[in-house]
Length: 326
Image (cartoon, rainbow, N blue to C red; front, top):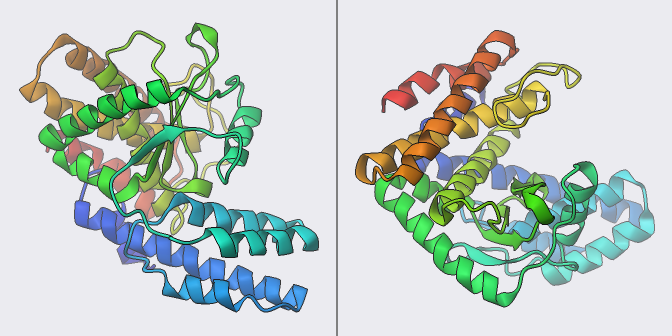
């Protein structure tokens, strides 16, 4: 992607055609890298994987891909980086069987996390790298209950902040529910480039209004997905990972990467809830909006004071004023 194209996507203002184009370019980059990894594995193993290569060539990058396609890519990359020939061979054989069908054919799928399958390792990694406690499965009854609530929350956003709702259609494939540790502590939501399009959401045990809770965290994580896709082409942030600053959401000091991400997603949360409040000024929406505005201002102040940014990274920050006015 050339510099001007990157700059076109470097905005907090939601553009549905822009999001779809960015997704297409991100998918194409992933599939090209995937094909290169398979060729490297073929050379090392002296074994052809023509079926897999043909499948990769046949994937339409303009369509929404299943998160398992991204998981397969990252699994193969990890095996190759470890120079584990046996694992490379095992991974390639598994990928050939599981990569199809590659597309998301309908809207978001709602389920629970699993102790097996392609995303199980991601769940374990999230648990091990963060002091968030255990992520546990939820029952079919809870899944059915949340299916109704999630679709109500998405409908609310589609009605009052349709641009964000359309970003859900473009970027969100799977919503996986989990139960957190007792007492309300721990992880609430997460997304990961290794399973791009997949969002993890904790079952609400904090007595928050269910539609506010779901709308907040879906907007949060889908906005992360947009920024992750853009950062595949431009780093945006040039600060050292060792630097630490006050964060807008979390209580601990955070690297600029996390603060920049948080400020970006908060800008979109403010925009979404501002639009909702214009039509539904109930206390649960107005109180959430007031909190997001406060958190956004805190993040914006830290970013403007301390962030070292690329041209695209700066353009996003400059765009916050336009977004808040729109």
